[in-house]
Image (cartoon, rainbow over all chains, first blue to last red; front, side, top):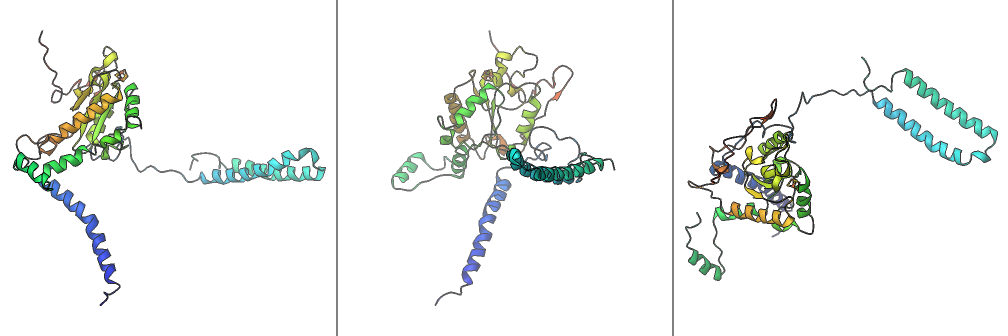
Length: 126
Length: 206
Ligand code: SF4
């Protein structure tokens, strides 16, 4: 007779339960009979690098700065366009030169706009 | 616990392929072969400690290669180097944050007594003024072999610790402290300058 295929799943669950519970139970027994727990202010402290923590852990950060990241991305891509432009600069016709200038101007305009909107400040006054 | 089985009977049984042990022996065997040190160094002695942990001297042979970056996981504090008075409170606090059982090796002249900087205004004259030290290693700096020797001494000490009875290990005694007062920065020196519960210098007879 072959056992039910789900029977192995039951065994698996049993082992999965006993395996982590056994060390915990042993540790509990050890604490109970041999080693008394000795908690203290330093041991229970959250921060564990020897230095006493200052102030609250719940500090708020402003999320406005994501705009800075977006602007960085745009200018990063711009640099990719500028490198081939610079390499081929001497062979370019005048039309291509003007086209890239317009492209730059559009981006710089955007930068000036973002700057005047205060997107580049770390902590904006609310 | 151990001692209940006669030594002669034990070796006789061992010859027959039966190995008799006690909880205490098993416990100490496990502990002494997995001493995890706290990962920090203070001055030049730390370089020797690093060399000990690296492949040439290979602290891993003694089960001590797992340097823990958190005091919560460490068993051993190797005070390797000059303890300045600025650093002493942090050392004591780190020691306090280590869970029992915990041990301290005082490595080098500086950690023992202040060493070459003993007369200095800003060097602690021995870390044993604030925390109990298990093994001292003289030298400036001690060679990696000396640290290995200290490790073996510590293993010997762990091996001899009792689980029960009058002379049981201090970390098993509910009345023994596990944390020691952290000194504070005073006007001229650390306050208090030493912990008289911990610091028992030998009286010098001339
Ligand atoms: S004992 Fe010597 S080698 Fe070690 S920290 Fe002090 S001065 Fe440096």
